Image 1: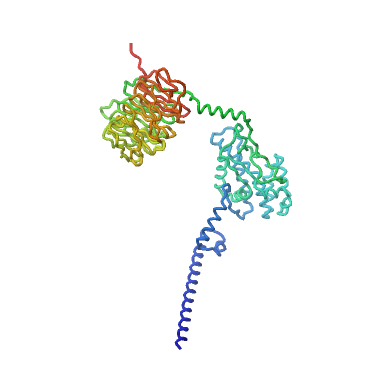
Image 2 (image 1 turned 135 degrees about the vertical axis):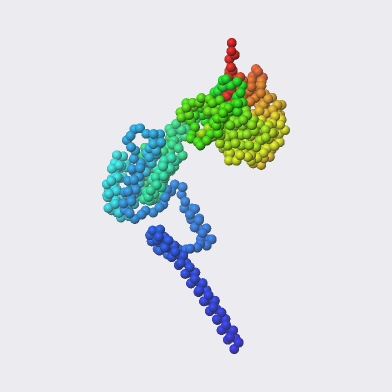
Length: 635
């Protein structure tokens, strides 16, 4: 009796468990149906068609294995040259409409006078026109295989005339006239070859981007499907020219028919596409001669650089600094009278943009007002007023949009070169600021002062971000490394220090100068640091090892400025002995000059100057020199 009761209780428990599981399944199914219903209603409101059919059997969750498999399939199915795989709509006229719109977009007007931008777009359009012929073939075949007989006739009648001038294209286009069904396509070997193999089109990168912008601008689903299914667009970085050394196939030409061929047709009847022309082969003797010439240029003595002098007249010994902008558009100079002056080095005059207020032009009753040029027409010189002491250094931003100046008044000012106004004032030093330098990307700037410190600033904050302390005397010069991670400082204590920009720690200490260090320069490749000063020597330091690389002698007075050439092979130095010297740091050439200068000296330039202030290497091996001119003695 007890055994029967136990069995009945177990049966009841099992029935209870089964009922609970059934309820859970029903609740789960109801929840899934509710989710599907909500999604379907949302898609209907968004005017998506056939949403119920698409949601039938849709899985609302995935296991980890299914998700990994899905991601793998998506990754493996990617292709760099696929434009789009969007399916076509059901409108039979889409082929004719989209193809006609593309032809109109690529049509070249008959006007003979275009702007430079329009000429560039026309060249791209002419290059992209090479896809019109294969697109016409494949769109026609797609319509035939889809059974759109009425659309096929109208499409062929409207567009086939554009391909009758070329004999090969004409032969293929005329065969399309008699193709009306999918069986006709299969019976034609040449048209079957079109479908079995992809048609190759070569486009340059700008032309390819031009085509993509058009395809994304409107509904071009039929064109995108044909491009992704039947065409292989090969993109080249630049257009090849006939004078290249190696005889490779040309990447792209402007002629529509000279840039296309078939891919993978080996001996097939339809594989007689237009071949891509090969480059002109060069003889081995000419190639060896060219390589030998390149080796001689690299390893031989450098050619003398071109020097351009900018001399200031009637400065009355009040000029402290002068610098040319990176684009050679402006010349800035700082004076003892606390002003900064800008000159235009081009024919275009300096004209300020509209601005709300200009604090540098607020005149007081005690001021002597000068007659200024008509501001509406601009002027060749602009005077920037704001400092209350002599201006010791100016520095342009890398993009030429602004100018920094430092002064005896312990401040650094930022000048907007659009409005020629002072828009920021940076305070932090307690004594005169001797030098300022802008980082290569204009993210930071650094300053050196009489307070024996260098400081790191950003343009968005008026207080310093880092303070570099360690020198025992004035910090006379500062210079950023090309990677902006390091900052070099030269001091009156006869040492040069290299600092970590972010950490603020000293990572190198260079000793060897016998006088204050007045100028610094990093090589563009970041390997060397040049320093010079009152000891009349130019020292080159190897940054990796922290040792002296070269000691260049020749100047007879203090060296005031240093600059490296863009290829880091030459370094120029200016001195108060009114000379500019150019040194080849790669190796020495010839014997020692008669004046006892180092054998690395390759050029010396002197002019009618009383003081050389600055040297700057620009593009194309041009060396710009600024200084004060010698004034003629009055009789």
